[in-house]
Length: 270
Figure: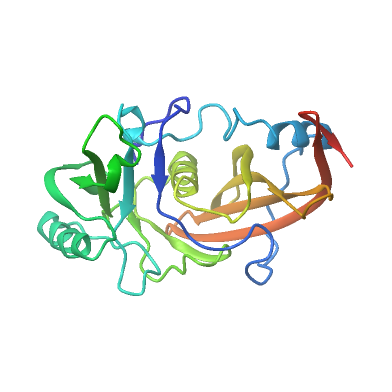
């Protein structure tokens, strides 16, 4: 999987979303034998989750389209139940799926070109928004719709509403820790949690005899109402890929919570 990795750029990016809260979705997953990396101190966690200039660690995955000077949307074509992203190795089939899907989107656009790499087919459309929302100087915004290549990522049968369980199959060979890392960090870009703030505190890989594991250490700020401190939830989201089959399992594991607040703009633990 030859995905570009560089520092996160500040862009206007509207990402396709899953529904669900930080620590309340899914039944507990089986305990993952992967050892925990050292977790930052409470003070460091609180400072990070309240830092508006921070969202992910240095060298975290950044999408190829992040360099655009215009606002844009990025969308993955899904099955009819909207449970998982479609995949094919055939350009014509991918184009037909995207064309049909375009007609059913809230904002459709005219075809402006296509692009592909080892991971996906991408179809570019110019989208027209009312009153030039997000693009004051332009009448349209580019929209990028993607269909995964099954030779790289097969998400057939994934339930996107769940944080735990089957996450797809990685067919890139050789399968490496970097491939699993890029997969986990790519998916994070297109996952929405219903919290005011969500931060990736750390992102790291480990290896077992039969699997590569990649962990996203997450921090969520959850507002508990007027006059109350925020609840900070710290969670491990582990993506484990079987070395022989590429099958990915997800383990969304709540670690602990603490309470904090901003006092005159300064974060402090309650």
